[in-house]
Image (cartoon, rainbow, N blue to C red):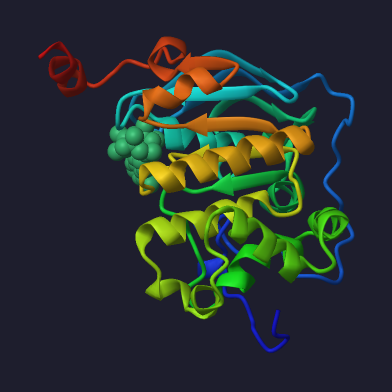
Length: 279
Ligand SMILES: Nc1ncnc2c1ncn2[C@@H]1O[C@H](COP(=O)(O)OP(=O)(O)OP(=O)(O)O)[C@@H](O)[C@H]1O
Ligand SMILES: [Mg+2]
């Protein structure tokens, strides 16, 4: 990472919607605690969330539990709240009501800065829209979590001699090790290539939980297979819990369990959606 680069709040890729509240590298007094022996990776109870607090909530989930090391496939129609739920699990936002525990830590009880730190240390997040930082190189994008989290950097260095080498190793598994490609600005990559950069960024430093929001939506069959192989391989090696949202139901059989958001979400659905589903 070039030392002259300053990251700007609005470009913070893990949490673009809230103020920039953690600073790279030095000076972290607070390390996000986890209960290493917590049996559950995710434990949600009585969760209610609405974008418009004056209107009915769009999510009303009595309970959702995901065990450590479990691989869960979450499905649901477009607009049903899958991305919103993932943001709540990762502490990007907090709900109006209910408890969200991740690795034994109540994320909803943490401050915004603490949630950012917790996410940087323990959660790899592949955003639906990727959220790459346009003014950082491809390798700098992939290694970014290791800049925000000493823990992630330490874990990356168990696998490779440097965080840069670890980034290249992950990119090679995603068929993107071509030196010309690695040098290219991320803004000049195809959407499918950007998606793979986002995937490598989430995997680097072996976070305990990987949350993937439609991570294969822009990949062709060949690259999708390479990505899924890497994902499952890394998760097995690092005993990572995998929470995976996709519209591609052919992938569901590879997971331990499928959760249908419409079944667990008791929020009143807008009339328009019910009519469309009935047609
Ligand atoms: N930033 C936002 N502000 C207000 N409403 C939002 C915002 N983001 C999403 N919504 C609304 O919340 C609902 C759930 O959206 P969400 O993105 O979670 O759905 P989704 O299941 O992920 O859909 P898709 O499969 O299309 O990605 C939708 O009605 C959407 O319009
Ligand atoms: Mg979505």
